[in-house]
Image (cartoon, rainbow, N blue to C red; front, side, top):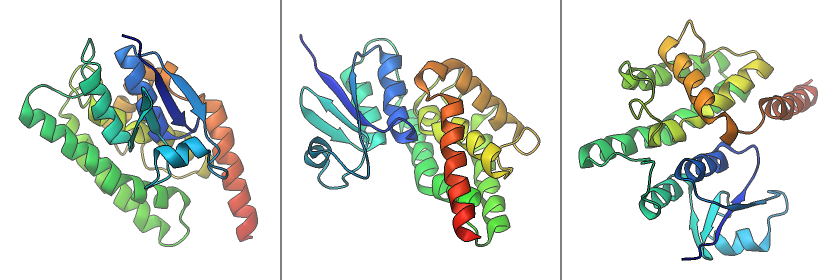
Length: 220
């Protein structure tokens, strides 16, 4: 059966990266289309008319939007080999809970702690407290999925990879070996296993450095 899989993405987006990680873990061949979010393509606007955001997966021209929804679609559509979600219904629900915890609770606070100027120290403290809850959920395992990467690990890609790049640029300390040793080790394991599915670190650091310099210049 011939299948056409396309991904509308932005190279440095952790949300796009989630989908690419899942497709590669499943061994699914796909074609990507780089989007310019300042000048969104007609295909993106047609494929995701509600949110008008990336990523969008096009499977035989049928669009699926929102990264967590896309991850579950990939897991259910290509059942061979690697499983993103566990089989047990309770464990599946548990994974979904923590994946949503990352998106709904952690990301906005971490972003504010890194880039926000108001109540910066309070935001850093709040981010660390949220990540401690996440760290506790590792329960001594290599990954949130146990011995292999699962849904929570993939959704946590911003924490594992992007956050440490941003920290290097802005000089904030949130995810460190001292503060969150188990989560720090997890981030190392995550990068070791999925390096080929992640954007180049030097390119990411350069992008954030440019953003940081432009914001500090503007505020001076």
